[in-house]
Image (cartoon, rainbow, N blue to C red; front, side):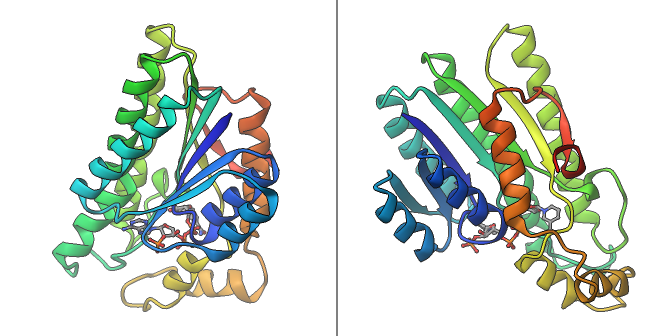
Length: 251
Ligand SMILES: NC(=O)c1ccc[n+]([C@@H]2O[C@H](COP(=O)([O-])OP(=O)(O)OC[C@H]3O[C@@H](n4cnc5c(N)ncnc54)[C@H](OP(=O)(O)O)[C@@H]3O)[C@@H](O)[C@H]2O)c1
């Protein structure tokens, strides 16, 4: 059986990835704080394996505990292939440095960077001892390579995620491993994250007007379109390890 683990599958891009994978008869494990009932229902209709684990990815102990359980279960099943989508993300805090609260700063780095590192480490450890092929797919952002005033923490976390992706790819290549790790910058999508961005203030975020305009002019990408392109890439077996893909490379 082929398994996909998707963090942040309850909404937005993660939800769209989960739905597409269920259509491909891939077993889906969803990890987020809330569960998406539509995914649960779709899995039941298709007769597919699906399990949701409630986990707050900003709490290290929860990440360790839940992902120990998930890896233990999956590797006992001797899966043919595993797809790990490190997709969950948070944009906040949005403000200039000097005006940030401490807790959201730490939460942002925990969810956007620390959790994907911890989870990837656990999966690669298990995969090295098993006869299973693993693809790790990290969802990054254009903000990883473009400094955006008001988004310093998000930009830094996503830049870290890109560097992590490229470094692990080098290590795996040196070890002559067949496991792949790559990232996708998904473009500007019509999700809750964009709602959060639009609800910030001009004082906190200089580009607010542009982001409101993207929505007004219907320039936001549907997450389903991005998910389909990404899943096509993952299933093709042609993804280049270490590459930071941009959505425009795929659609
Ligand atoms: N939307 C865009 O324009 C855009 C652009 C570039 C990159 N991205 C990236 O694309 C990915 C998906 O974003 P999206 O737009 O789909 O966001 P979204 O609609 O806001 O969904 C975020 C997902 O992350 C989960 N999540 C957030 N905090 C969490 C926590 N503490 N613990 C567990 N799960 C948590 C949420 O689940 P729960 O609330 O149920 O926990 C939700 O499923 C992110 O990595 C984001 O940075 C988005």
